[in-house]
Length: 214
Image (cartoon, rainbow, N blue to C red):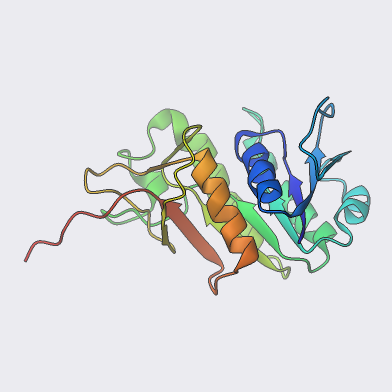
């Protein structure tokens, strides 16, 4: 499979590149800034700005799947809608897996995660709001996309190969935590590319839910 990863230098994008290459896929890694000095064999590195539709149309041509793993710089959260809209335009019908945020998910306690301080403290609210805006931009676009919401906490860690999959409700473990390593999120991304589900939105996380009380 020919996979293009946009945002390949980031925490998620870099791990998606590694995971896809390890599974034998050809990866085109798109960097907005300086290209890295060393790359995995099987990775083609190119420069590209996700908002440049004309340039990105050429970069994305011939891809079997595209991963959008871009993240706005602090203070530039209002750019997310324009960025994903431009990328979907450039994709020209090729499926784009958008690695977004947990904000648009339903909270286990009701309402949305963005409004639940148990998962989104005040200092995270701006980026959580951006993910909600990003999802709305996807929903308004006629392109082929699927939106992956990580759990509340996403951080570098260990590749365990184990995760749970859900749809539009935040996944939590029995202790109430909601987390996954970036390495295991990358597994979920490539799993979805190899065997696409039927949902337009999905989420992943660790652990088993708390048992129901009768």
